[in-house]
Length: 183
Image 1 (cartoon, helix red, strand yellow):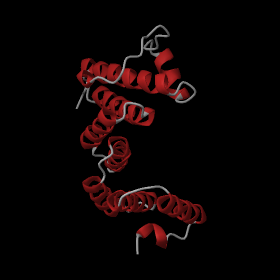
Image 2 (spheres, helix red, strand yellow):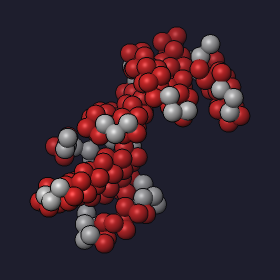
Image 3 (cartoon, one colour):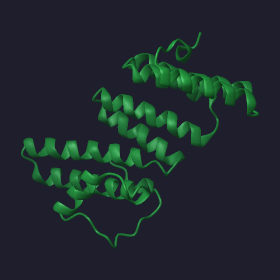
Image 4 (cartoon, helix red, strand yellow):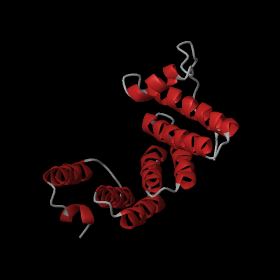
């Protein structure tokens, strides 16, 4: 039995029932249904802090899922797990992969900015102000992209950008570009 069908949470059960109905109604292939089941199981395991199990489900979903947009969310969730586990370099790579498939994920840009900001703070603690400024500048770029996609969110990031002089209201928002990668 899929993990999501074993969930005791009312909201998760309701979502599962609705998702199952939609999967039956909408024209989908067996492969698409299986990919969705693994994705849903991954989300369920992730919400319960069962990260190893969640990763296993997400990797199975990735092997089956062919839709680039859907793959972006799987990759994003894998990035979340690596962020939670403190593996920031790996998390950044998964966020990049998610954005390569779907450039409209402000939450991925936000998470990347948070990681860069954290690295900037770590560089300060290590006494390397030049490196810290580079990380903070990269964080600012990612936060500007997140805010451009979702202007009503990320109030703390907007405040930080203004306080540090990194907010530019005339900044032109460009589409996602791999040349801005930092690892």
